[in-house]
Amino acid sequence: MRFVYLIAFIELICAVYGYKILVVFPMPAFSHFRLGSTLADGLAEAGHDVTLVSPFEDKKVPGNGSLRSVVLSLIRELKNDNNFNIFDIAKSGVFLETLFMSYIGNDATNRTLEDPALQRLLHSNEKFDVVIIEQFINDELKALAWHFDAPLIMFSTMGATAWLNSISGNPSPPSYIPDTFVEYGSSMTLWQRTKNSLVKLSHDLTRYFIVYPAQDEMVKRHFPGCPSVETLSYNVSLFFVNSHESFAQSVPLVPNMINIGGYHVQPPKKLPVDLQKILDGAKDGVIFFSMGSNIIPSQMKSETKQALIDVLGGLKETVLWKWDEDDLLGKTDNIVIRKWFPQMDVLAHPNVKLFITHGGLLSTTETIYHGVPILALPVFGDQRLNAAKAVDAGFGVFLHFQDLTKDLFSSALNEALKNPKYLENARRRSVFLHDRPMKPMDLAVYWTEFVARFRGAPHLRVAAVDMPWYKYFLVDVMAMLMMMCLVVMTLLYLIVRKVCCRRTNNLKLKKN
Image (cartoon, rainbow, N blue to C red; front, side):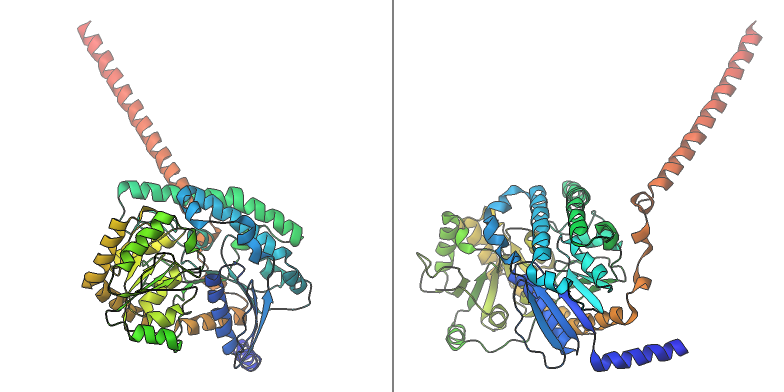
């Protein structure tokens, strides 16, 4: 009873003063920052003292708690220093993509920890009640929770990935759960299941033989005395998963994996006057075309760009095209280009008939939120998987960006625009996303406070986390059964041989 009173007293104090929460989203991509900043904003609005570590500054002023930005400067140059062209990287294939992402993850982690702003935080005397870190091939950052002696929550920007499943004990059989980097639905052929299994294996091998050794070296350099990366990985209290069954495949989730997908979507705001006029005046409807915040569309091949212009320019609909340059040579009057559109607010407009997208997870979530069907042109990473899921769920058409020709694009566009099933399924999925027992942000706030309140959540941890692989996959059991079968078969063989030999000897004696 005293314990109950103590917990109630602690809860009362925390309700008044709030918890100190460290949120770390280090990837230099604005889509990742949006997820991190929205989570930090929600926790601050709930009355907590939040510190956000990110390459970008969160300028929002919360009404209840407090929000401070620790801006990482070194990592923002990651793209420029490596001179990435995602269209070229996408040609390398899924196995080389895995190696590429491992390289990027190691480089980004090192830059994050060597950043002067984070170093100042590490050498301060600050304490935190809970640490939330984006999981993106940056396992060394889990040492931040060890350094601040706080329970750890990991955040997956791409759902229940192989990285999260391996450290949480979450079952993910490759027979029906496609890997993040493949383009298959849940019903796979024999060849697809074989490739999916090999891709999953390559992730495991890359993690243990490339990522973990490199990040262990960083741990030794930055956090002397800290446990290994593998040990840190298995001490996570909770996993936030940016997914939901309305726009993603239904998959198993262990008790400490919490689906909060859709929490970043905000109610639509008023559009700029000129954009509102364009959308309102589009009597034949609007097609919105955006390749996200990480892809630079002007880097695409000239013949691909021309095919897009030829097809989109021949439509009666108005096309809003997010383009990174001031001009688009050859565009027609129905095409409106801008370097930035308020995507969520545009998708909310009733005249938008179709969203042509690269298939990023945030874009997929937002289009389902507003019930708009998609034509997915995936390029890299999880975009192909998201596109395949859209086809499975019936709210989208899938065309590889690398395979895009004028005829293929025109055919896919006509299918997405003229077949009513895509709009019907998009609206149906939108209902599923909205009709939830609890708002996803409220869910994130509740579980963050829960972990802070109880200094972790070990009771949610499944036993699989502590099992070696040969026990988890029953290799020892199968070996024992095989040995027993072998012993039984050997004994039967010896008995039969002995009986047969005795009968043979008896027959010989009778003949003699």
